[in-house]
Every structure is written in C-alpha cells, then in structure tokens.
Length: 535
Image 1 (cartoon, rainbow, N blue to C red):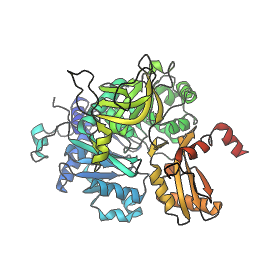
Image 2: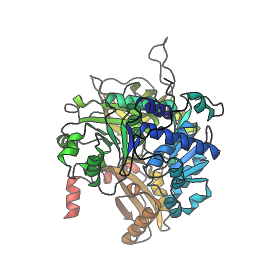
Image 3: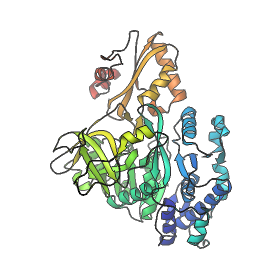
Image 4: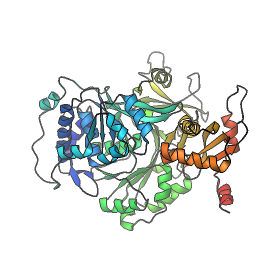
C-alpha cells in the first residue's frame, strides 16, 4: 500500500479497500469510494488543464455539496492548496480572503456569482461546469475502470513529489486585529488529525457521519476527513430549520454527529423519531463549553450514543477530548490530550504550572499547523519552541501557544479557565471585535465604538456593542442593524447595542476600557435579566 501522504491518497486507499462502500450521501445521490476517486481524478485533470499546479491556491465558495467535496480532494491531489470560504461571509470578507491568499482560481456556483458580480474579476470555475466533468453513474455498484497505477498518478504533478510537511490548505479564522487571518494546514495535519480523531471516537466503516458544520471550519472539515480514513460515509447538510436535521438523519441513517453548543440547544428541542435517535452512536461537542444540563438532555435523547467533549483551535485542529466514561464525573473538563499530541500548561516564562495552577495551554505534535499566511510576525509569536523537558533530550519542533488559560488537576484532566485575548466565541465561531467595530465606524454619526462578548446561555457568548453617536438611540440602532445586515454574517451582528452621547470609559493609557464595559454588561443575558426584558 502506498504511503498516505495526502487526503487524496487516503481516498485512493479507500477506493481499493472499500470500493463499494458509500463515501458520500445526500438527498439526491449516493457515491461509492470507487466513484468518488474516479470523480476526483477527473476534476484534478480539469484543474491541471486550467493551469493550476503545485502550491497554487484555489478558493472554494460553495455549499456542502458533492462538487465541493470533489473540488477539495482534487485540489489536494495536484499539490495545490484549497481555501474553503464560509458561505455565510459577505462580499468584502470574501474579497479579502481571495486577495490575501492570492487564489488563482475561485470555484463557486452561478447563483452565488450573480449575487456577487465583483467576484467575476477572479478566474472562476463554476460548480455547474465541474458537475459535468465529475459526473458518475448514480448506481453505486456500476463497474468502473480500474484505478490508475501510481506512476500514472504521479505524472499529474510534473515531477513534484509530495511530502507530509507540504502545505495543503489555508483555513481563514477571525483575528484579534481585524480581518480574517489564514492558518496554513499541512498534509500531515490533515491526515494525522483525521486518524487521531477517528481513533478516539472509534469510527467504523459502517458509520454515517453528519456534516452539519461548515467545511471552512476545522471541525467541519474534520467530519469529512475522519469519514474518509474510516471507510465511513460523509452526509453533509445545509439546513434552514433545526427540525430538518432529525428527518435528514433518519433518511441518511446517520450514526455520528459533531456540533457546537448553539446547535445542540436547537437539536435537543426538536422532535426525533425513536429510530433516528437510537441509531446515533456518538455525539461530539466543539467550539465552546457544553453546559452540563444540556449534556444530560443529549444523553437522554441519544440513549445509545457515547458523548465526546472536545477542545481545539484552528492552529492545531483537535487538542483535547474527554472520553465518554468521564462525562458523568467530569462534565466541565476538556479532558486530556488527543492521541499523538502533547498538551502543556505553562507560565509566561515557559515553566510548567503546578496542579490546579492556571497557565497557557500549549500544544505540541503532529497537528500544529505551519503558521499564518502572510503573517510572519504573528507566526513567530504564536508558533515557537517550548523549553526542553530534559537537557539531553530537547523537545522537537515548534508548538502553538493558544492564548487560552487552563488548569490541570491532580489526575491530569484539563479545565478551561479563560481566553487570553479579546476574541469573542459565539455560535461556535471566533469573532474579531475589530471587524465588528469597522462596520460600526462606517456609520457616519458613530464617533466611538467597542464590541465585546458576554456570557449567553445559548450562544456561548453574545456580542454587545457600546457606541457614542450624535443621532438618537432608536435611529442609531436602526442604522447599525442595517449596516450589519449588509456587511456581516448573522452570527457577527451585535445582539445588544448601547447608545450614549458621552465618551466611553478610558483606562490610564487613554484607551477605551473594555474590561470596565464588559463588567457593566456581564449579566445582560442571564436567565433573570432575559425574563425581566420579556416582562
């Protein structure tokens, strides 16, 4: 068997090992591993004909559909970097990603291109045209031509030889300084990460993995990659109402679900048939703390499922997980290191913290990404070596310093304490306050603005905006709602807006005192406050 350097190699292995297993399923088709490999080869050849080669960036702005999955794997196959774009982003954010990544090609649909005509200034490959290239018979067991020999596959690369440290993708995540920043993911990150998660979740070739998170989100991409390394089926879904999810799970025979806390709140509140909920073998949470009462509701709902509570960051994919057996005793813990990772809790000087002493979570191992695209200074700050555990045996390579504060108990279990910067974690997304504030400042009558997150029982954090405006409060809120609707995805819009005529509070350095503002609104979305607002 050839070494599985890339996810495209994983797919080729799957096509040999499980040729007739369903690899992809949605409401209109079921595609076997052999068929998917056939389609990816055809799409890779089409990309090469368009001049895409090793190291080029290909942005993919499309829903979680068959052509999107084929595109990701085809780009990977030819040694280019795929850049998945969150479908919720607005035109200015998409343009930033295209410009920053230097994408030579944008894969998108005709409908999206009509809605954002400015994107047509880039080289575009429509998913409708790609669908004609990658069409395969819908009958799963239709005989296909045998897999091409490896020598022929390598000819696609014009002499390029893949190694696992080569970059494979750029995943854009909001940064604390404004525009989204690109995290460069290596071939090894993708493959090793997929095998690690599949191992501790005990995924099997009989599983059907629901793909409900965006492919631009590392956890969403992981649903696809873990399915492929396991011989399982990836079943993506874009939904409008939460009630659609149980019906889809029933129709597609879903056995595995990974979500973020706001999604779990929705899924716990809609009806599930006994068949669909009893078929779930595991459910996993990421993107924020899952409140214990909600965890218990999910355990009662999915009677046959193992719960997995996970913590990770885009810069290192998954970092820790809490095994199902520990969910009853330690539901507030983020667990221990995932397989093939070392998790350290360090003081600012790099020394290791003692038991229950808060410190920065530092991740070392195969999942540490290559750094930030076009951000050498930020990369040098966040990606750096850790002190040697022993003078004669230094730790190898660099680690990612997460900026998150955790503590480790006497038994080695980790607990999240706080975030070390101003990033807002809402609805499973990382939101930059600066990016929200830029939209607020685009409104002429707003003179000062500060955006921050406060605890929210359903969203993890809710975004609060405090502004100073020369307009009356009602008109100001109306203008803010319109500007956010036009320029930001829904999850980035402030849920609460406070308008005042006087200056925002300052700290001794003359800067806006964000901690003071946050303290004033800290309990804005507690149960009692929300009940008062209803009354």
